Image (tube, rainbow, N blue to C red; front, top):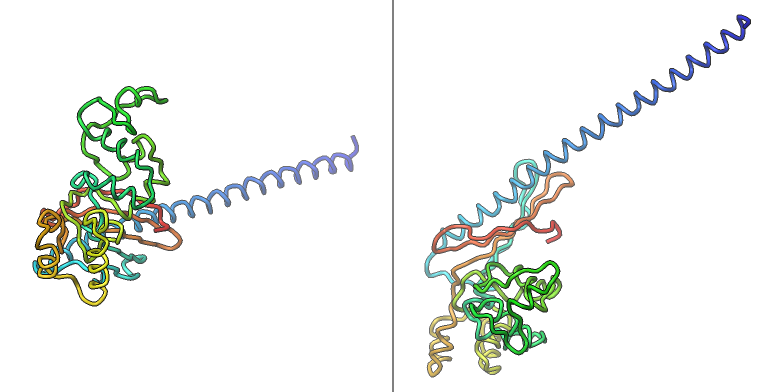
Length: 287
């Protein structure tokens, strides 16, 4: 082989080697950039999660410092707005759980609420079978044998609901229906509902009398309903009066936090008398 040919081969080899090194260098640089991006995102996620938890903790403290005489109303300033905090921001929204119908505490009213909401009435039977202790199915319900026939098989709880999300395990309930019901139902442990905050549908399910419900809804738009108002309106209906309260025992705290482009959202249920969080779940940051 001539010297010129040898030089040509050597040049091709050198160029090829340089190309390989360039590819490796580019790959290493890209990997380094990706690693840095992943590290930044991981740190931002931790910070956002901490900020969301801090928002819940702060809201719990504020609720605990309220006057015993203060009532819950729709006009109360429950939204914090977006507040800068640490490396990012956090916003908190609070709702009293007494605005919703407790599926465990007020189970006898559930069929009426479902009817008002246009939900299949048979689902009330399915829910009652899920929570009762026996294995005798109601006409529209299901018990042990039906659930064991599913794939995979499972058993009804035969106990009070532990969360609203548990409804997805009950015959006839799916995720879309459960989300539709969330504004109206709870399992926090509320024995009464608040006429100052409850939706008309919930009030109608518990009170049953449209005229009384309209009176409450119209009245609260002008001024908060008082104990005297309730005592006068339901003087002859003590059973209904016992199911109405102006201040609930549980609150839902939702916090959304952001650091850079990262978002984290959480929801907690506060037992106000005990001053403790009794339920917690991660939410989609789109709340």
